[in-house]
Image (cartoon, rainbow, N blue to C red; front, side, top):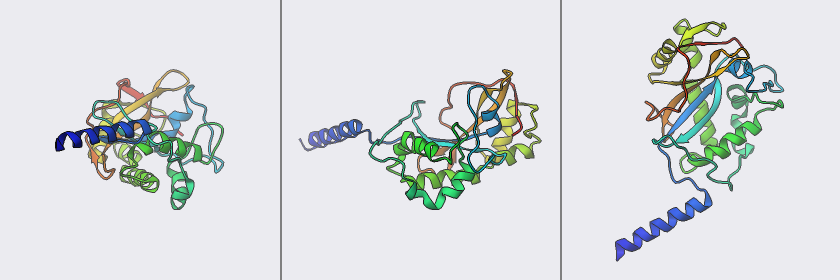
Length: 227
């Protein structure tokens, strides 16, 4: 009888969490960085620089996304915990440098960060509060210097085409882990290096080999546009 009661209580708790949209856990994070040159050289996006001007020609953070090993992911897990800029006030200057918004209309990034926290960050709030979530992403950005890894292999953003395999190898050599590359198309329809996915354990502390990769593929040769 005791075990039946415990099982019933656990079931009811899970049901309540599901109704409330509170995160019940996840398996790992995708840490996603984007190349601004590919964002801005695409018909898919409208590109507007922040009020502070053109960002640095470097990979910037797109997001830190909780995921499940089956390829699905939680989202919008806690509508009662919206983004609060005051909780990250000491990180704002670093976020503006490393996590800028390039969408239109031009913004300082608050709407971008709000979207990322509310859609993705709330699903890891049982482990990372708002400050810890953004600090974790910034720390991972410094830990994984994607551009330097590519440059060390002679892969530079000069508008030229490079082997997808060589790009993956360069990033793996630099970070120690296998990346997943997302491509988009430039205004002429050429495939180009857009985003780099690396996987992180559920604590947000350690890079890991990805349990599963997103869907999609790039050509065997892709452009690395200037910015």
